Image (cartoon, helix red, strand yellow):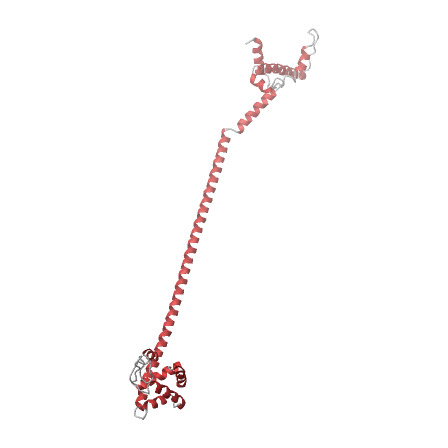
Amino acid sequence: MSRRSTTHTSAQQSLPSEVGAESVAQPVTAELSAPRGASRRRPPAGLRRPAFLLAVAVAGGVMVNVFAAGQPDAAAVAGPDRPISVAAQLQESSQDSVADSAFGTGDVSERLGELAASRSEREAQQTAAAQSQAAADQAAIEAKAAADAKAAADAQAAAEAQAAAEAKAAADAKAAADAKAAEQAAAAKAATTRAPAAASSSSTSRGSYQDYALSKLGGDANEFSCLESLWGKESGWNPNAQNKSSTAYGIPQFLDSTWASTGIAKTSDGYRQIDAGLIYIDSRYGSPCGAWSHSKSTGWY
């Protein structure tokens, strides 16, 4: 290294760093261009210090330019048309230092801690929301199951009530049918019991069958006349009369099926035959004269 560069380097280290070369170039040049032999008046002490400081600033600016010329990176950034001053370099360095201090290790750790805490909080919120949704879904499932069970129980109860009502209706119908059958049986038994007593009371009189029939008709001579003509034609009032071509038998000449419809079994007792004959005539024609009229027009009754 030359003596000049060494001198410049030592001078650069002792000068202030924020004074530009351009700001002091003109006064120093003016001072140096004064004639060598001219008399110089020493200025007052208060004015000598600013002049000294200006000289120092000029020397510092020259040294900074020399030092900056040896650094191609700074020149490349600034460009040939935009020289970088000491103040600009110092300002950029100060800004970099502030930026570095703003994002120091402590601040980065604190920021990372905040991010981790925020992430943990979000995860906790997401977990709580998922648990709440799962609880709501489970509650909905349980409510639906309870509603289905209640509906099934109500349907079963309704079916059982319907079955009970139908069973009661069937029982009531059967009881009514049994009561009616019992009433009919009792009436038939009473008629069977009365017939032998009436027959025995009139068996000793002359024309006992006719007299018995007249008494059963309540003494109505007109109806008895029709009955006498009807059964006189059928059997001649003979309780043992038998039709050779059919099962017709007795005073009324009933077929076996006709006997069954009267509720009195087929018998050779003439009085019982009269009872059965009057029952059949009353239910079929309403009176002996009605039966006789039908017989006259058709030949049977």
